[in-house]
Image (tube, rainbow over all chains, first blue to last red; front, side):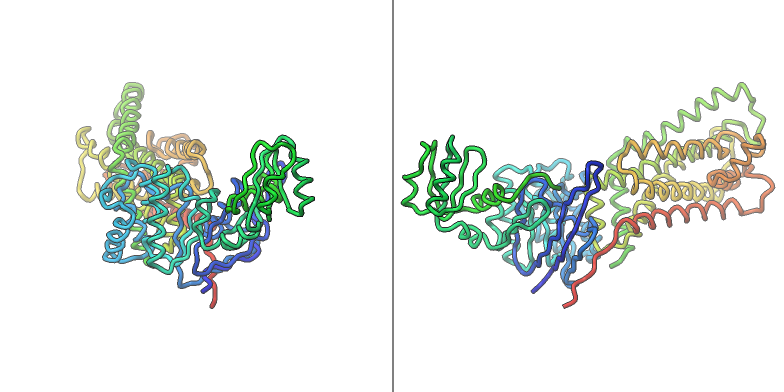
Length: 295
Length: 260
């Protein structure tokens, strides 16, 4: 079922040195799925999140949302009152969404168990660690049981363990509901968890597909080569009929034949033959289409 | 969606924040009391104690109470800027709660706290020779609440436009301090020079001070119809709240829905 339809979003930030296009004709549909919005810093991810959340108005384009689906939003920085306790913050969120007292208390009871916040309910948010604050913020967004959850770089600033805990909790919550999730990240290992990955750069959608489809687009194997003589390796890649992209001393060759791995010219520093990963997909597009800058 | 429920929840949040930041309350009361002490100490010898219907010490108390309310109101409205930076406001704006409930929560709780702080100052009146009645104190509190509602409404409208706390403070001080100084807070308007009286007459705070003083049995603005000071004060407070709701509503618009 379609939950959100985005059509031709255009957002331009005025700048004295020339207007900066943050979103350039972005269109997408969100159904019952989890989507990772992957892109470098300044790609336009947060701008798109802001427009979807309704905190930012586009210059043109439309966002249509199924009126039966509420939306929960986890911003880059927690939308919590640091002086309030975890419980008080969640009660406020429930009241803002018009929930009854019983529904609020039931929802809090359920969420704090799932997110490991039960022992922190009466603690002021300012005394929580970054990971606990983030989980509290997720609980805030989930309390009204939204049909769509938007997360803007939800693990930014968290250590590895806090990151794993958060994703584990989100996975279990999503498995038990029909909630769609759209999250922005610049980490390929986080994007890998999604049903669908949308790669965005310079305000445009570069590629859109499942992680498996995206990695298969580079063939069954890639060659990652580090060399002082990239032009020679590029020429060799062309001669064997394999597309390549390079930046500096690093060359990435797609659709590689394992038999070619040992015949790379130019005395390379290292040659790695591997099944392509989402990071290869990201690097492939980063080197071939991204030009840097952006929102 | 009940806007009232959201307004009450947001108001409760403001009150909790007040309780957990006692320094805000102390600063709001202490500064005006120091102003009062220095003004009274400095001027009483120079202009005597009998140039008003009350002694100067008592005369200035309602003005000091309104200064307390003014500081508390600035604190209340500047919290909107902090809320924007902390993201709390974004969470409120993406909720289905109506915009007016955000203003109502801030104004309601802020005015309550400001009025109570003003009341603490008014409580010093019996100690400087003024007689108080219950009705007079209730009227004065209502007047202080109207000042607070007006100033928080004005502040919220400004805080929505200005992005920095420093800029907000600068503008609020540039607007509010002259308003307070020319409102009869520290001198009787009826005895002021012609030009200053003119300025005071177009200053809404003067009418609020007049209403408060009248409630406390002091002399308000003379030669005006009875009750005009209350009408002007209520009208000013209402206009400022409408301004805040309008500015906030203009800046945030809701999204269309997908028709299946």
